[in-house]
Amino acid sequence: MKNIMLVTFVMVLIVSLLGCNDVKENPNQTLIDKVKSFEVNEDQLLKLQISYDEFKEKMKDVVVDINYYDNTEIFGYSGISGNRMYLAKDLVGLTLTEIKGLEQDVENEQRKKYEEKGWDYEQHKKQMELDFGNPTIEVKLSNVYDYKEYKWKYVFSQTHRKYNDENNREQVINKRYRLAEEDGIWKILNVDVSMAWWGDNNKSMKQIQLEKIHFQTFNNEPVEYVVTFNLGEN
Picture: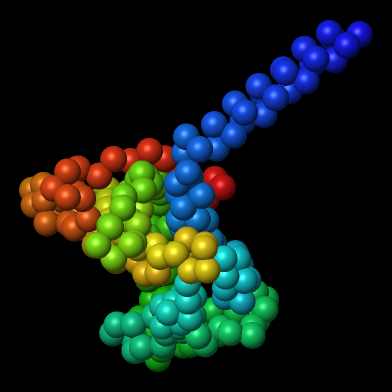
């Protein structure tokens, strides 16, 4: 019986040690997961699936100061019919139902302006849905890179949007997430963004656009992406 108990103890100890080794093999996974969390929750905010207060609550352990996001445009319109834009800070303290009500007010206001000018708002709305509605969105996240001079870490993301409009437009958005340690916890300090567009009507520009887009390398080496997921499926 003692031999059986000893063998069992040794096996449990080995499994425990192996488990610890697995954690140590990828100590930066937590940082990659935080960047993914930001990408997913930002997508939900912009689609009005969560309120801004919910977004800030979810990001409190992910971002150093989420208030930097206050001036981000969430919904509205600008152009020949005028300008009416709601920033994230305008939505503080509002429920998701209240926010969706504001979005409906904005749409009604824009509709009225179109009608006053004798324009066809429904045709405009239909075209906007064709141009921007329901793209496929693939996101890639990189490994973690050390920027030792300032004790920062970087995680890069690349978002590829494919639209279903008649020009088969595509958009690539590269982001560089800068993370800093705060009270022993790594959080996102800021995000740098670079993007490119092209479609069937300007395919010749695709290569030029991709060559000009930033955040494709680190220390003159191509960024290595290790995680891929589709937004809307998480």
